[in-house]
Image (cartoon, rainbow, N blue to C red; front, side, top):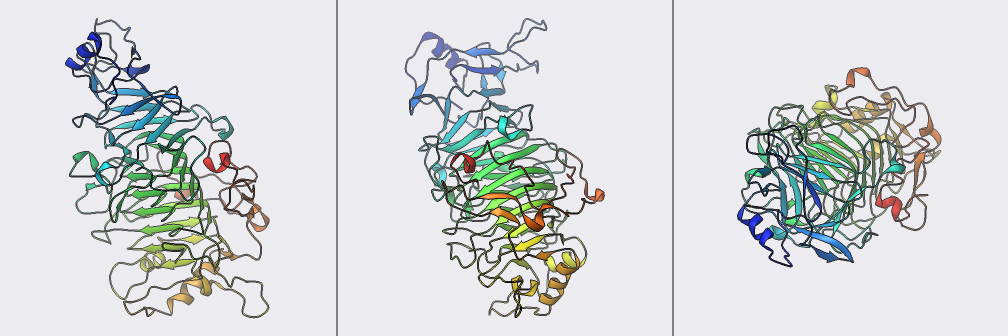
Length: 535
C-alpha cells in the first residue's frame, strides 16, 4: 500500500522510496521483520529490537480529520522495505487517522495488519475493477479488535469500515453499495473440486484471491467489535462483494461482535471453512442476511438478522456443495440462539422477498437450535430442497444431519393465526416445497412429513411475539430483541456431542430462546444502536 498524496519531496522521502518503501504512513507504528527472519528494526544483534515510527509529513484531510489514502502497489500488499533495507511485514493502523481505501487492498501471505480500537476505514466509491475492498489473503493475518481484553460490549470502541461519504452517523438503512467490503481468506477445507477456489468479487486472476485447503485450524487473526456499513459494490452481475466474506477461514480465528449494515448483497457469506462465530448482526442487507456455501461447518451462536421491507432476500440461504453438490465435508454448521426478523408479513420487498424465509438446498445440512424466527414475508417460512433425483437437503434431514430442534416461530406470512378456532396456522402452511420447471410441487407428500418432524422436535408456533417489540425505523426506539413470553425460559441445554474444537467452539447453555435473554449485547457498539433503532 502507498500514500497517493505527497505534499513535499524531502531528501528523506526520496531516500525511502529508493529503498523500495511501498507505504508511507504518518505517525504509524510499524514493526519490522528483516530478511533473516528476525523481528524488529534493530539489526545490531542485541535483544532490544523495537518498533520504529515513520514521521508524519505526507497526509491529507477528510472531513477535518487527518487521513491516509491507501493503495496496493505492485502486488506488495501492506509490505514494504524500511530505511535499513529490511522487509516490514506488520503494519498498524491507528485511530488518530482515517484510512481511505483507494482500491483493492491486500494483506498478503506472511503479512499482518493491526487495527486499533476506534479506527475508521473508508472505502472510496467505485464499482467493477475500480471497487474498493480489504482482502486478507490466505496466510495473511488481521488483528482488528475494537474491545481488546474485554467481553463487555459497553466498553467497546468499535472499528468502523464504511463509505467515504459517511460523516460518522451512517447514510441510512437503504443506502448500499457505496464501496466493496471485507474478504477474509484461509486454507481450511471446502467440499469443492478443486479444493482451492478463487473468491468472488475480486477482479482479474489474482492468486491472492485463492482460498481452501486442509488446515482446519487455520487462523486469520481476530475480527471483533467491528462495524461494516453501506458495502456491496459489484465487480460484475452475480459477482458481488458482501459486507463480510469468509472463504476457507479456520477455527483458530476469532470472529465475533461484527455488524453488517446495509450491504447491497449479503451481510455475511461463508464459503466452506471451519470457523466458529458468535454475536453477529446483519441489518437491512439487500440480499441474504446469512449465506453459506461450499461445505461450511463450525458452531455459531447469538446471531441477529433484521431485514428492510423495501429490499431483502432470504434471512438465510444455505447451500451445501457446488461442484459436486454431494461433496464432503458436508455443510453441517450448528446455529444456536439465532433471532431472525424478516421483512414483515404481507410486505413486497425487492429481491427474493423472504420466499422462502429459510432455504436449505444442494445437500446442505445446516441445523438450528433454540432460535426464534419471526416476521417472515409472504407465506413461506422454510424450504428443505426435495428433488426427484440428485443431491438434495431432504436426504440430509431424513438422515439426521440437518436438524431444526426447539425453535419458535411467529408471524410468518400474511394469514398467521395459529390460535384461531377454525383453520389455525400449522407448520404445513409455512413450508414451501420445491417445484419443477413448470411450477409444480415435486413431492407434495413431503410437506406433511417435514411438518410432523418439526412438531416432533420441539418447534412451536406462537400466538405472541418471542421478542419484546419489532421496529425497522430509526429514532423510534421500537426494536427490542430481548426474549419475551415463551422465549424467556425452557430452551434445552446444547448437546455436549456438538462441541467443536477451536475458538468459540463451545456452546453456552442460555435457558432462553433466540439471541438475547435479559441483556442486549448489540448495544454500545453497533450502528443500529447509534442510530436509535433499539428500545
